[in-house]
Amino acid sequence: MWSALALFTAASGAVPPFQLSAICFLIASLIGLSVMLRQPTRFRALRQPVKVWALGLFGLFGYHFLYFTALRNAPAVEAGLIAYLWPLLIVVGSALLPGERLTWKHIVGALMGLAGTALILLRGAEGGLGGGSFIGYGAAILCALTWSGYSLLSRQFGETPTDVITGFCLLTAVLSLLCHLALETTVWPGSANQWLAVLGLGLGPVGLSFYAWDYGVKHGDIQVLGVSSYTAPLLSTLILILFGYGEASIAIAVACLLITGGALIAAYDMLRGKKSV
Image (tube, rainbow, N blue to C red; front, side, top):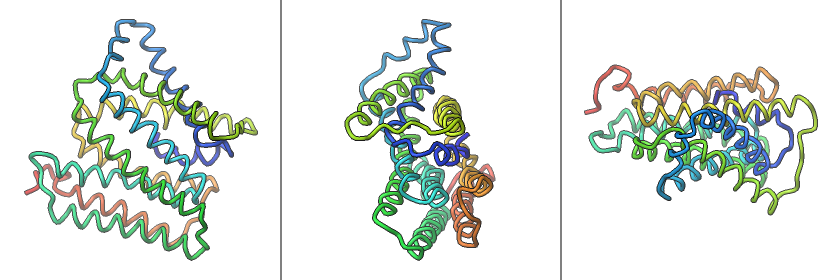
């Protein structure tokens, strides 16, 4: 689902970031509400401490506002690849948790990921990187930091039911709407295809994926989840190129290999079923 995030965002037209967030998160919240209404007792999951709600808004609202901003102000392929540094950051960050150690593999993997990012930035500069593009690239970097931080911190709230994601989505939709009304000019999708792209965002990449991810990081092996996410940047880039939102090039291929390869090296011991020592 996340592999289609960049494609659907690019295909959604010129809808402003806050407006797009409001629409998508409203759709995402309706997914959870439709389930909870059938079992009203599940609404109890929404009774959570302020810190839980703050984390949810930081992750969902913060990440997607930055992501949409990045794709509005930088080429879709480059911004998408930078934003997808979060699987690598999850592996490196989880290695610093109690009981884990940061090894040379994590360091090499992180450096390879940074090298891939630098290659993307240098490629953009050669084509005449403007002020707007700097905003886009900066938002993409913050995007990666936000989602990796949210995922790692969610691990500390393993007892919180996944139903709370419904509340996160609904609050994010309201907050996005308020920001849109205060800061943006409304621009609706201009065609049926653009509306379908927005609907696709709300159902998949900005919808069901959150419920699945929340359950996974709380009840599964977060490092294994990070490893399984490494295909996202590659698939995302290939999808964008396939649908005409980017051009294949040696630089993009090398950057993609560096980012994905670096993440795999960082997770080498985990893939072999061994603890880092």
